Length: 287
Image (cartoon, rainbow, N blue to C red; front, side, top):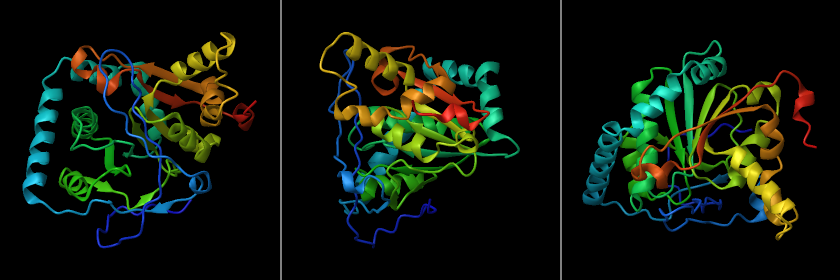
């Protein structure tokens, strides 16, 4: 897979490819989902990308940066954050991070599907958690970010916070050629599936740590739809979005996080850490 471009060039007016990113709507905390449809013929391709909104507004940029700082402080002072860190540092979870790192000193972080940080507090909280993780742990390295809805102002704020905004829409298909933490809260199943497909090999998957929607919940949802004889989930086009997620459950160690309070339900409900432990290619059979 071609190497990604880390520095966003806002002078490049190439049109963006499209990518579906949907926030699950569950429970009493609901928000508008963000959805961009991917044309089938583009799904295998990396698309050059620049923001559709190229407005430069220093006042908006300053306000957004302030909002991010407020969100980071909110999480840092919450009961949720120390519980989250305790889980990461518990032996059963940290041993997986140690295994993924191997002989490397840093775990690169890639954030897909973060959404509009200017429009939604839930996305600001998600990004804040990622930034605080990097601040807390010396073994978390550089952060790369992509979402096709990002504006130029949001991209500038992300860079001010120490992140690199990709100028290529990878469609989630980043191959983990080195240990990588994929931070993907509340993305659509198709994006997780793309990531797994791009790394469908023993060495690559063993280099991946993934934070995102619970794979166990996907499996339970598929089974429920199938056996309850409702509109068959497995016979619909949605089945294409879980072709690698469901087989991956066989060799996935999953650790669900606790949201602790309603303040963090919308941003992190049904989120889990996923680690893949493989020893041979036979485990990768899709059927």
